[in-house]
Length: 456
Image (cartoon, rainbow, N blue to C red; front, top):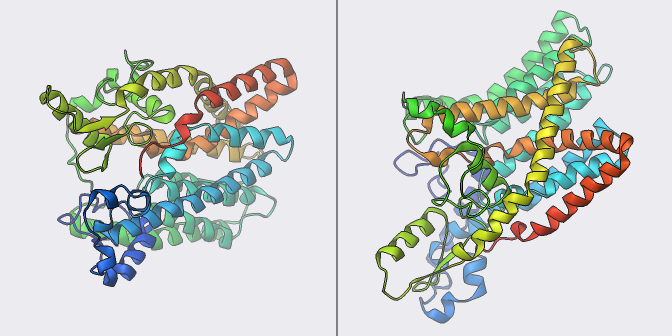
């Protein structure tokens, strides 16, 4: 935000996030630019005394008035995520109603399953691009559904969907996996409705041209200024370490159910993603630390460094307060009880693949199957893109395995799981009741995971 306040995109010399698309931080950048003239005001440079540092305002609103107006811009961007969450919730319910108007249990289950995920609250509580991407993915899915109504595909609707795809790719590079499926949806709708080639070409080209018109300038900028449209802050390596099958297929680590926090667990893909989805593997949300000298909170890698320094300085007076070792047992229990909702989500994914198979066997001609099949493709392609990314960059940085990168697949997994549970309810109502009761107990046990101990 600070680097881009003059209207230009940040360079590699200014920030290691130079490759990130600009749309998510645009509101914060505008606020930063507008408040910059007040940065030298005496009110924004308070005394650095203990009484002031301990005030609620200092830590919970501006984080650090010494960083004004950057801290204000960051807080505004963070609070904007509340709006993104509300709109996303409405979109998920609207998609559920379109897919299955009845019974009401379907939409309730879909929303409830998503609402159980600590990963959702953790991601939306931070200044990240993923909340806006999450919203745009659901918006694209919602606008995709009318295309399969009789006469539903028009060039205007295709262009609107292209705008979502373009804005999505200006939010996160990951959105390209969703954009491909949205484009496929336009083509499938044209095929289903037996449009003549001119109208079909107009619809598909409207989608593609609008998407490219919005997103292409930024990626051309990266190509010219960073040497690659796929620029990243790590260099791709041709290393066999990225293809270590043990990394990808190890299901459980020794500490998964006892101490699932970074540096205690090993570095395997599934245990990390699982522990981050249900817990706080990276120590950014419920695991916290506080520097006793300055009063500032530390987290993540900074907390790791402080713990290592504390061990090295054994025998000296402690300068770090943390709940890291008090909460590890609870996090392990969270992982254990969350095996049930995880199994339901996996069963939902399998059910989505059934929809995909049925749609393919029907030659994509059944409008009742195609939306489900396309949602399954979003999940499949998104996970495949993440795995390909890890294969390239994993040799240098094991922290690339982050569940937030695929947060947008969970609404679709929830829809599949809810559809499957509704079918279970119709045939085995007692089994359904037991499953729902157990899910409620899991949600109750995991409730503290939805509230951060950090000053965000």
